[in-house]
Amino acid sequence: MIKIEIATSTKDYLQIETLADTIWREHYIPIVGKPQIDYMLDKFQSAKAIESQVKDGFEYFSMFYNKIPVGYISIKQETDSLFLSKIYVLSNYRGKKIGKATMQFVENKAKSYQLKKIRLTVNIHNTNSIKAYEKLGFDNVGPIVADIGNGFVMDDYQMVKNL
Ligand SMILES: CC(C)(COP(=O)(O)OP(=O)(O)OC[C@H]1O[C@@H](n2cnc3c(N)ncnc32)[C@H](O)[C@@H]1OP(=O)(O)O)[C@@H](O)C(=O)NCCC(=O)NCCS
Image (cartoon, rainbow, N blue to C red; front, side, top):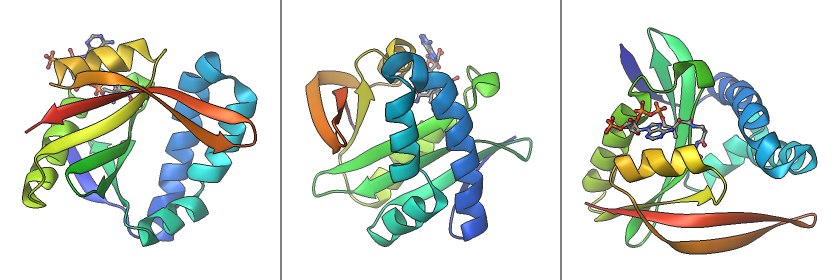
């Protein structure tokens, strides 16, 4: 029912761009406002930006539920950790264990890369996702603020899962 497939082509990146546009606008405009989301979607989640991140070592994967594209992730190998840079599921498909199955996939990837932890960052006001990460075995290790340009900052917590 749930399939996770690597994104490699412009068509795949465009599909992710469309998913990001829907998910980020709905989920993040109430948290950080429209100007920051317009900026972030263009800078980080356009098909072109995704293609350039893939060249820099990020791997993107799409999740399919009964063959429907319902979400995506991005991961990157670091020295000690696997960085889970993105994990997003369309709102109508949340709570169906797609996130859980995806996290198992990420865990298997980390192990295959001989990495002993997964780390991620999450907006400090993204309460539901923080709760989901805690259920999935992540610990909050404290705040981390990142300047993303144009006067915007990302006000996050860093969360870590030891494998
Ligand atoms: C966070 C997200 C990826 C989780 O995916 P999902 O498919 O909804 O999660 P699952 O159904 O697999 O649930 C995983 C676990 O978290 C728990 N959980 C999910 N949402 C929860 C919530 N709002 N409150 C408490 N627990 C929650 C589930 O009960 C489950 O735990 P269990 O197996 O012990 O019962 C998804 O909700 C999402 O895309 N959210 C919006 C976008 C976002 O904020 N992404 C993260 C950016 S850092």
